[in-house]
Length: 404
View 1 (cartoon, one colour):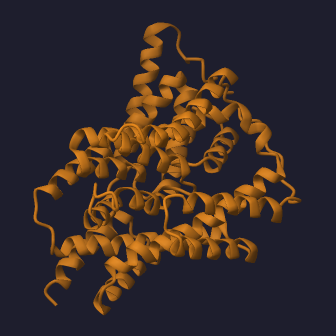
View 2 (cartoon, rainbow, N blue to C red):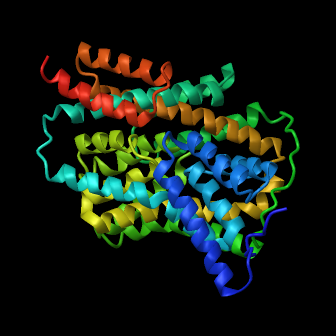
């Protein structure tokens, strides 16, 4: 058995504080050591939270993971939030997110200030980081394609999504593509049988859930309208990052095209700074969504970083809390599962489009760039080197290419 979200394992204020400090300590350690992206993060969580500390049983962890894969947003962060809720209530979920996220935010904000203090216009290591981003995203596309588009129907959806994304580059094109793919999946897989699974044993009141879902929807709809009446940059940034965090299915790599279309055309961040920061994000532990902190810092310093991080992660918290009471009914619906299959296939296509533009078109400019990318790809896929090692090798390779 596990604790309900409203229960604290120890009694009284001292017990509550002890639980929160315990969650903070463990999640911070994970935030300092969890390299490798969201799938690897789930493995770290399983080892620390489930096998070692037994804060949740195996079946509950699997079901929580399934819920967070179903929701838009950073799946590994949402799983961490859910485990924090189990251990120390709703505040425990917030503390678990803070501990896991803060180390990489600090590192990326520091990198943003370093970038602003240097003339990086022709720096070879910056070009190397761009090539690293190509390799890491190519690997993500390959892995996600095998998992999320394994049959001809879903692969067709993925390819169509890629074509539409490349051909129709507007603010809402990706959202409409995802919705259309969900409708296609609902129709194609409407009769697919779904294996039953046990109920997720985390108690969140329906009132709390409804409030969170209502706030999520109000912000998603209301922020763009509010921007029409208030031209403050912080509000525009909050809206852009919040919308990106609300619409990302499939993990941190998928936010790349969404964020690029929000921050580069607006002039908040240059294309060069964007790609360099994305490459640097691969070299540090923690969630990829902390890239928003880097972008915010480049655009508006510390205050921009706070806006970026708060806005992009807020939907994750609202959705995971809001979905818990309703997940047990939804997960057994063939229609919901079919729509999700179509959405996930479209995510593969959207990421494939981002691999070409802006990544490939701005990083692979000469035959030697392609040669370095191939070498890094072999190191990542076949030699199984961690992403941070690939980033360092890419930076060194970029410097070397500058002398050739």
